[in-house]
Length: 163
Image (cartoon, rainbow, N blue to C red):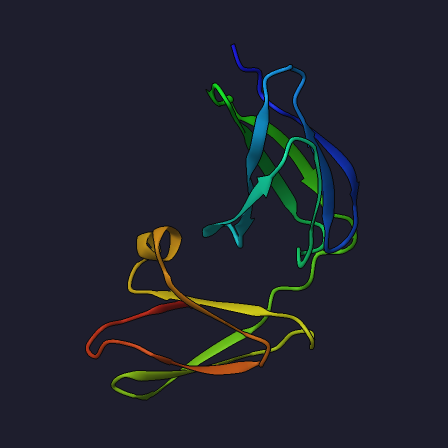
């Protein structure tokens, strides 16, 4: 039986998490698959996937959000097949940024100008869809470091926007 990998949180800060991966077995490990999950504004679960080569590994994941719960799951790729999943949870330190204040204004039938307030030198995600279900499951999205963006939409539809 292949055991799950051990995920150990080495350290964390406002914007990063460092963790180690190892197996407690003599089975040869060729690498790991790691998923990092977090929830964006209770509407959208985000995921970042890391493919890691080798047997032992210390990884650092950066560009995270302060005071946000993250779930790390991992499994090992071995000579006998894939291991079961392991999970750990960690909350980054610091103070979570204030949610931006969004204004969306139709420019014409197919363009909407979105603008918001918030800190400088960060990346913003703009999510939009025609229903709450679509906004949660599979929204259209784009990222920007600006405080405004023009989004192209389908004519004769109503949209929900989230930044």
